[in-house]
Length: 297
Image 1 (cartoon, rainbow, N blue to C red):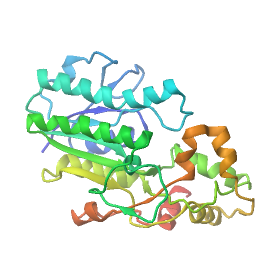
Image 2 (image 1 turned 90 degrees about the vertical axis):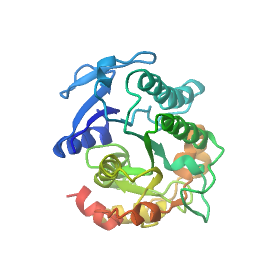
Image 3 (image 1 turned 45 degrees about the vertical axis):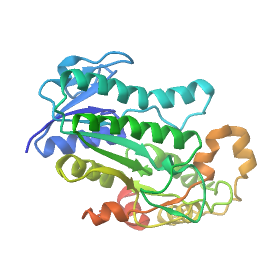
Image 4 (image 1 turned 135 degrees about the vertical axis):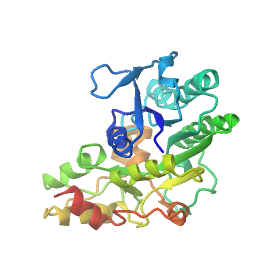
């Protein structure tokens, strides 16, 4: 059944691919953006106002907007990370209450950092307790803002997204660059876990969240395979036919250079994919070997 869908973050890496997939499936996609030069039909919004036309005959909202976390975390930028996710969700709630109270679904991005940016022996499942560090608290409030939409008897889905690998840019370009230059090195001890997902699999998760009316709640968006940072780098170097021999970059140095943000690359835990797989979701790229065969060709 064709639906009218409002998409925030539609010009980003995931959003641009997702909008194309939804249109292929016969849905109408309305991009909510602050930009002006995009090809797709769009509606404007800012911190306090949204074009009300975007809510006419609206069936659902997908909320992907959020400032990148891959930028030094100054006090002011941490505020931007928070507000770009939570305040915008609250703004959407206000307009939904006024203009689209019969909304069928609200689907929100969330982060694998929900469980805290730590390295542990735990394989985190969706029912596990959240973390209490900065990103953990951001994800908690992010999801709480999404679940407010249940007040309209709206179906809510949150995808706790791990590292997204894509040909078109993002983190994968940064991971490839030093290896391509033959200066690849592990960050810290290299034992931190690296949950990840191919962008195509993530897009399909969102499509299923839109089209499967029984899909509710929070889901980990990470592949079944569990690998650490060192294994990831060595596999990538082998696939690129590059040497990998440089000494590890000390954690202390990275903390001096990056500050609190260094936890993003120095820590990481495994995520369970059991919940989404039990729903019948099949990963197209369940292993790094298979993903890299696609991403590097």
